[in-house]
Image (tube, helix red, strand yellow):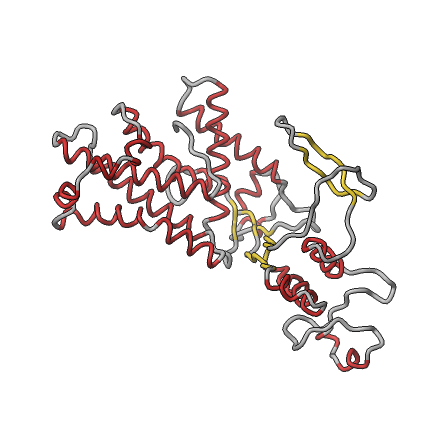
Length: 367
């Protein structure tokens, strides 16, 4: 077939005269003369199966049963009876790095050539730059680096070269590092409590780190950077929520109820009183940033760019931490102002929890 981007793409019979008019560079071989199906050929069939237009199906067998009784199935050549229906999707998002862009575009053009234009319109390649490791991270994972490698900004992961990182190994290393930090900060907690908190921090660290980069940026993963409690990291955002929750806990108040009942707790006159004058600019900035959550999420969805959400989380957490240090809320003598400041904390806390939930990041009860 024609390569994507070289004009009208058509699947061609090997004997078709038009095929000979294409230069070699404009052709994409789907099936070799030996009868071997290439990677893209298999991918075309696979995506036809996903959309339910292939006319063929896999066999399936039970792979794992969860404690709640839910069965996880795996494809197989023979399979078992009674399996659920798979495939026949309406929308496809393929999360694959930019090096596969040509192959992904070829699959889309093949679907169009075969008449599946509606399916092709609902095929999205979620393209991102490669994920690599910093030299420090690679060394911590046990890889031997040359002197030249140690000076490079990142070390490219390559399965073919035997240089790769398993997700389980990465998470185990993150958990170990997070556990050391939690053990040092809170030796009075039980082992089970420290392990739970360490897991939540590690999960938050890796998810935030992977999402904070725009799709066109190379992600150079680093343990120290990801687990830092300062700067643009998951633990920093989690800690902002914990701080906000601690204010309500120490004050004997319920944060969720306070945010829910906000309109009836504080009158417009109170808002007007404390949001007037130049000194209120900082407070306005915090309120307005918290109010942008829905717009930011919509923008991230429309552009398939989750980094917008991560950047917003960091900005909101940063503004809140500045606010937290400047305003001793629980010791505030003015009852109306205290209610107003508590309202700010409740709203910011609610929006941070909402944003982190969208990113799949859990909130530890304490840190």
